[in-house]
Length: 132
Image 1 (cartoon, helix red, strand yellow):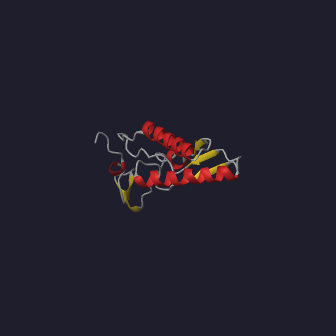
Image 2 (cartoon, rainbow, N blue to C red):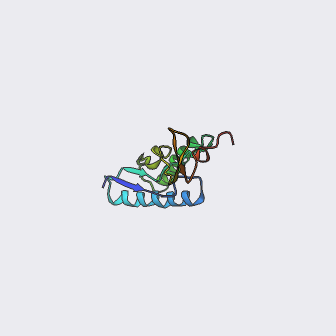
Image 3 (cartoon, rainbow, N blue to C red):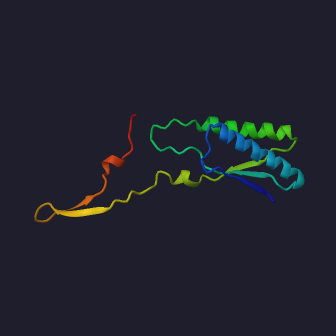
């Protein structure tokens, strides 16, 4: 085995839950590394915080530095060589590429040539809120 995959569906976040799970996972990596010296890679899945709004202020640099430093500390405690770290961006790469489906509630004849659809929603109400 060359790679151990760590995944938290709630995503990478600066919460006690995340840090606790990361510590358990890296400790497990250290135990596996002693049994299998070929293990050399951690895949950290679970996605970084999604930028749902344009004004999101998630500190990606802090999170990456904190994750790397915690992995180094845990490996040093267990006297194990630090792993190569990879990640898969998962839904992060497609989070803002989405679609909205509306139900057509009815049709309306606007004039001689125009027929309008009445929908159960509005494009305006689904636009991101800027400047908040």
